[in-house]
Image (cartoon, rainbow, N blue to C red; front, side, top):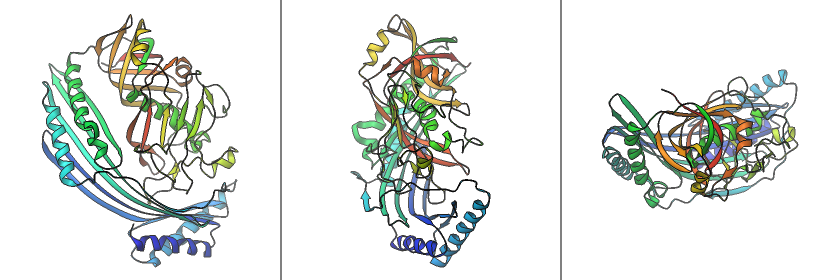
Amino acid sequence: MNSALQDFADKAISFSLNSGAQYADIRAEEQNRESITIENKEIENAKKKLEKGIGIRVLKNGAWGFASITNPRSFKEIEGKIIQALKNSDYSSNTKKTKIKLYKVPSRKIKKDFPVLKNPNTEELIKIGIECNKIILERPRIIKAITNPWICQTSKYFANSEGSKILQEYTDTVIDMIATSHESGITQSVNTTEGGRGGLEMILEKNTAVNSAVKISEKASQLIDAKPTKEENARVIMNPDFVALLTHEILGHPSEADRVLGKEMAWAGGAWWKGKTGEKVGSKELNVFDDPTIKQSLGWYYFDDEGVESQRTTLIEKGILKNHMQNRETAITFDSKPTGNMRATSFMFMPLIRMACTCIAGGNWKQEEMIKDVKNGYLVSNMKIPSIDMKRYNWSISCQYAQKIENGEITELLRDVIVMGTAPEFFNSIDACGDDFTIRPITNCGKGDPMQSMIMGNGGPSIRGRATIKSVR
């Protein structure tokens, strides 16, 4: 962290209070990003970007004000932004019926460095990207291979008027890969993302990137011969990668307290289970949690952007809705506690309640055992594209491929498959959770106005339930 930027943040707290703020918090951040895009063994794009600045949040007369500044050169520039944020508070206060109150949390003074076992660099990124690209192109019918290794090194300093001073420094290392096949007028595409919070070990350990490149290339080639399927309501087994997106869309987002309160209804929707805390929303096999403390996940952190310490939060326990993800403001509304889920994409934005690593908990079933119990059904694999209604009630999610299950055995490979259902009906149909719990990297979750794209983890085991399945031709 640039020492001048950190000094500016500390001074900004005092200036905010002296200028009339009841409360203030400041986020000083530096982000260094590097990305390499490789298509068919050639480098198409190489980007480096350094961003640094300060985000200023003030509370005055029971209303928030926010402003940010990129690369401030003098404290005088920051003073102007603070005055602007306070004016925004005054304006909001005039129209706000309920004044904001904050749940009290302990102040902390601490520095947290996240481990990096193998430091990333440009040469290594290119080497890994090209190697995986070549592997994808080795299979017949593959016409396009895209690999995009990238890193983001972040230094984030949080200070508030209650005495907290928290510095967190971490690196994210990720590779996105796409294999596209074509033959006889049929085109199929399979993609994957690998990586996490750490250095190059996140994509090199256990040959993660290389093995994934092999898998997506093989599957994209095989899908040319796959068949579409008819529409039917049947038992479905979803693999952990597909479950990660399902968890994200119909369990994670509706668990964010601001959505439950309808504060995002105009642009992002609400939650169908509003007012149902303590009620049954799924089968006894369904247990859901959010946990920012899971190491190496893209949602791993020690303190959120309100200075609240991260913690595991139980959202659903044995099918009963227990809690939502809370910030210091909504915790008072729900008579709960802050869960450490306030995050912003960068200093440029006001923090929002965001998932960190929301997951369905694992069970005791082997996936093979689940399959053997199914007379007629489907094994659904790997996330693709979601389509969810405003309250996260009706949902459809396409998968990258599926396989027919007949009399307890895997038979045909199927393509262009969509899985559909309603949240309560599907949750209540879950009768088995596997022992293959896995966390997947999610790199493009959008929320807010203006839109903030956030990275995080989501996960779960293989699960079995009932849903409608069909192919879109």
